[in-house]
View (cartoon, rainbow, N blue to C red):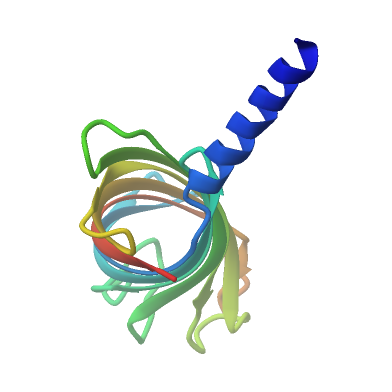
Length: 196
C-alpha cells in the first residue's frame, strides 16, 4: 500500500510539473513613467515624465512562477534641461537599466492571470561635460502588479503598474559641488509576451 501511495504521489508531481508553464518567452513593454528626482542636499524635488521601452527574456519555473532578464531604456522630457538643483544639463537625459524580475501569477478565470512582481537592477545615466564623471550608476528596486491575458498558448498581452526606486551614486560638477540623487517612479505599462 505504501508503494502504491508513493507511486501515486510521484506520478501526480510529474504530471503537474509537465503541465506547468515552463516555456521560455520573449517580451516587449512600453510604459509612461512619472518620476520624482530628489537631491539629498536640497529640499527641492523635480517631477518629470519619461517614455520607457523594455525588452525581456523570461523562463517559466512552474506553478505560475516566472523569472525574467530585462533591458530598459528611458528618455526623460527635460529632467534638468532648465536649471534645477543648481544643475543645468545640456542634453536629453536617458537611462539604461539591466536587471532580473520574479513574477508570481494566479489564475482567476480562464486566461486571466493577475500577477505580482519584484525586480532588482543596475541603472546607468550619461552625464554631459559640465560634470567630472561621464556617467553615473544606481541600484534599482521595482515592485509591481498587473493582469496577464493569455490569448493563445504562446501569446499573452498584459497591463501593469510598477513602482521603482533608484539611489544614484554621488557625482560632482566641474566646481567640485557634490550631488546625491534618489529617484521614485510610478510607471503604468502595456506589453506582450511570445512563448517558444
